[in-house]
Length: 362
Image (tube, rainbow, N blue to C red; front, side, top):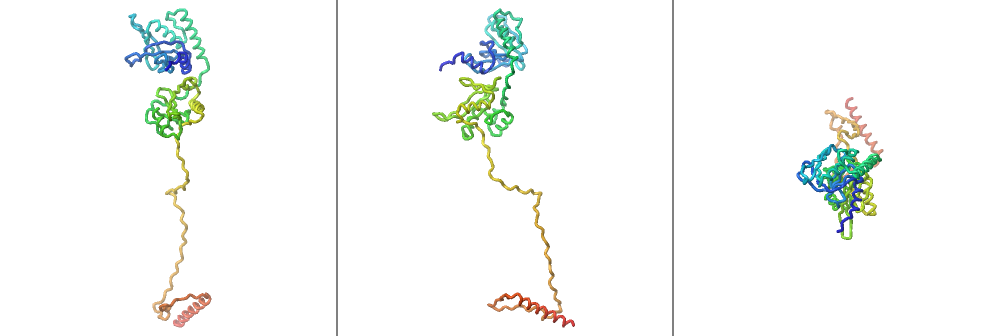
């Protein structure tokens, strides 16, 4: 595999950091809680010190913000053979930097003091050429600070909350709810969880934007069909003062994560689409139940009139009682079809009964 040309690496670093380069070189770094120094290649860009694993790496591993530098002192040993160490006291930490010579240590001090304090140090013995270079850097840094402020950096994902079991839909929606600027396919999940979501639910989409393993960075995971089969791909998204940098062979800078999603959709000719969890919908409308405290109105009941039956005197003769109807076997009563004749017959019987009662009492 051929090495990337140094010029291309420097261009990528300039694109990612979006800051001018003032000084660079190899050094060793150690924080106050560490026992051993670690080797880095460092670049002073603006008021930030970017640290790389080596000179061929285009993406920084760590960075030190020197805006809030409290003090800087050189702990140079008396022995010439010992490497000089200077200590940077920052707002939240103390860092020691070791270089190979005392001249290199003084150069680092001079450049850091110039960009942070906005003045050329008077305590260092500098050559005329070094003073001219520091004057140029000081003028460039003042112009950069007076320039129009860059657009705000998009909100960073919650960290380290995404390392927990945040792959559930509720947790993902809660994460998006706290970050209203995020695309609909943003989930607070790890790389493994994102790949599993895409593999198990291909019908929901093929692109997930998520927090990256590196602090204060994002990543994009997609599921794509290739001639050799379905593959998972992951891309790093680095926030910068100019927006979001998509880490490709030729880095691309966009203004927001929504623009990142739009860029990938256009480049894949919209054959991929965002991963959005489906939510079920009801298809029937039912009648609401009546609350227990509300009783249904019952129809009013009209009381029926009760007619007392006729009371017969105990002394009435048996002849006054109506004779029982006698029905012989195989004999049926046929109702009278003529209603008038029936009424006349009943009237005659009633008149006979009344006449016999009157005659008895008189």
